[in-house]
Image (cartoon, rainbow, N blue to C red; front, side):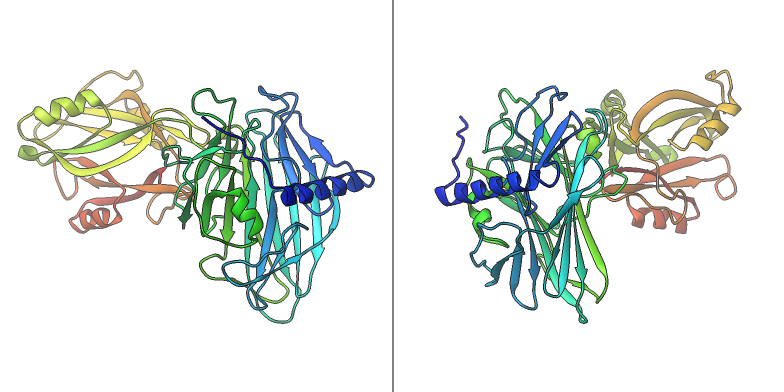
Length: 463
């Protein structure tokens, strides 16, 4: 049973003041922009809210609470001041700082689908950009970016906080869960220091949801990636609206918000005359911000001890058979890939070489998503017949991401884990070819030291 908490009278007064600011802003520029899928409302002190647009499958519903309850904080650690773009916030925080209102900044249109506000403050400036990107439901998202410019002659010790106040389809008490890797939904407020998940999902109801929203944390496939915070938290809006930097987290099943921090564990440092940016995204479609909605499958490694043969499989039927077969055992090595294609992924093809080793006593399997390797293998067996010593294409096994840099010294994008490949080759191990794939750099280095060929990073999987 979900209830919809009401804002307090003082908080509603602040919201009303924000709405008056919105009216004033509308005399100077359009205070509402939309691409038909999502809509931004913006006021003269940089408050913004989101709703679904007329072209959204669930049109004209709230995503954020109306203008006046979501705001940013920029903490000056040296002077123990927290600057906020909210006229209703005046309290101190757990850090003992004093709240300072930034007031009405200089606001202008950012193209036709966004807004930019600049605040000129003592010792530094702050610039906020809020912009819709995308043209269709599948790629529409909102970018929220804050820049801090050190205008003083000394290093600036600072931190940034976002407070996003959700009201999904009219429900203030949204439930949340981590995504990629996925966690369970919860209504219990909690903090996530140094978060390792790529994003989070919130919904208005588990029983009959109207829609979900997705907020980035790190990684993703956006062209300007989100900035990983050192802390993100699912919190009571009531508590964190009143405290411009931090307060104790407690409660559940009430008016909820998400807070992001950069410079929470220790202040960030910005040299004189330089600029630092933080950004995050929100969407009603997981794929628009690079969140995988695919289920996963585990590739598990076995060894056939009599022939010292390693075999990797994701197929449940293989695992059932091998777990019961004499001579076979699990090595303890495994990794997770995606069951279905997601944006940015490629298919991992499984090949079988029959009678390739040990005097034709055994075959060997091989996995790759590298296009040049697939082309070369197909060229060896153009008709794809199951013939001895030739690569037989058994089809797409699963999906993973291509490396940013492939091979020895290779790397993966943020939020992804490298999969290394070693090969027991003909030169050092005649008539005994075999590949191993692992996410363990220690195991990879161990087998290279044993004389196996190190192929480096060949694919990347969800972290």
